[in-house]
Structure formats: structure tokens, C-alpha cells
Length: 103
Image (tube, one colour):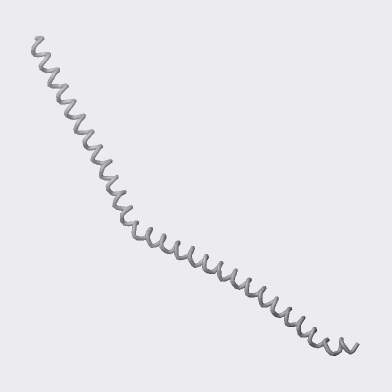
């Protein structure tokens, strides 16, 4: 009994100290995990910000490309029209020449 009374306080303080240290370790691991998650989230947000910035800077390029496509389509249509007119003109001329030789 005397041994328990003599060493009881030290044992109690040792148990309390072990509990506090265990709790502190647990909290430290939890905080480290949260810090890691926060860093990953910050990196993802930074990446998204960079991608958004690139998109904003590329938008005028996309518009210019679309205008170029439109111009090319219009030019192709005009060229087709001109080619059809030239072919029709040559066809008419050949028909006239053939009629002249046959007559």
C-alpha cells in the first residue's frame, strides 16, 4: 500500500503524460494531412488559373482562325463559281465552233 501511495502519483502523471503525448501526435498527423491536402488544393487551383489565363489569351487566336475559315469558304465558293463560268464559256465556244465546222 505504501508503494502504491509512493509511486501512485508518478504512475498517474506518467499515464497522463503518455495520453497527452499520444493526443499531440494524433493531432500533428491530422494537421500534416490537412496541410498536404491544402497544398494539393492550392496546386490544383494554380493549375486551373494558369489554364484559364491561357484560354483567355488564346481566345483572340481562335476568333482569327474562325474568320480565316470563313474567308476560305467564301473564297472557295467564289472560285467554284468562276470555274463554272469559265467551263460554261468554253463549252459554249466549242459548241459554236462545232456548229460552224458542221454547217
